[in-house]
Amino acid sequence: MKIRTMYTTIAVLLFMTVTVMAQENNQEVLDTKISKSYTINDGKKLVRNSVEITTKRLNTIEHSKDDAGKIDQDRIVDSVSTIVKTVQIDNDEDDAFDEKIVFSYESKTPEDFILVSKNNELVVAMNEGENLKIVENINLKSKELLNDKTTYIFTNERGENLEFLVQEYSRTSETAMLKN
Image (cartoon, rainbow, N blue to C red; front, side, top):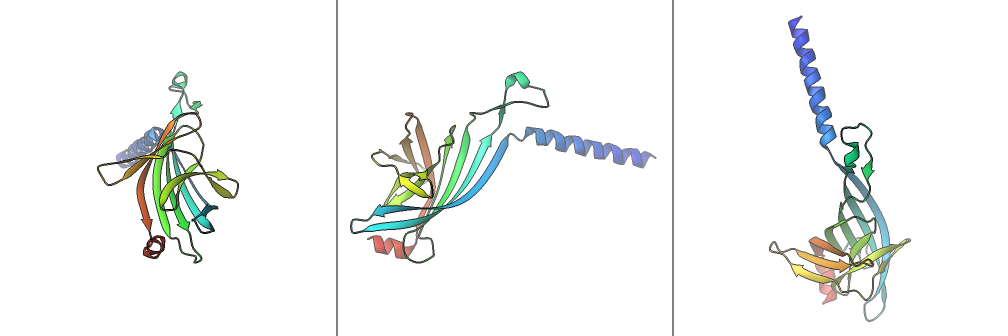
């Protein structure tokens, strides 16, 4: 009988531990993958680039302080999300991707910004149906960080600064040779 009581006690303690740990998880992860295209003028002709965008959105879940201790708590909607994007660009006739950009930023809004390349520089683009539209006439400031990464600062329509931390920007050697 003592063994049965001991097993029951251990099972209850494990269940309570898992329940408490589940309550501490205050993040929600949303993953999406979409394909888009955008057109640029390379100085000689219009070039259509295909893009595959993988987005990982980490939403911090915040609850109303008035609901503390309640089972059915209300969420605070404008909590900050960390968005991590992987953009793969095919800018020629083959099916292989030629460039890869991995960047992240934090935002309270659902606006969807994307960094793409245009004539050997990174520019901001926004969703426009099945295509991407490069945001013209903007100042995309950059600053180098100590760990060889670059942060680009973009000011949106509401005057808020968004910092895009570029974690990776790579190009295939063929593409790099074609651009020179």
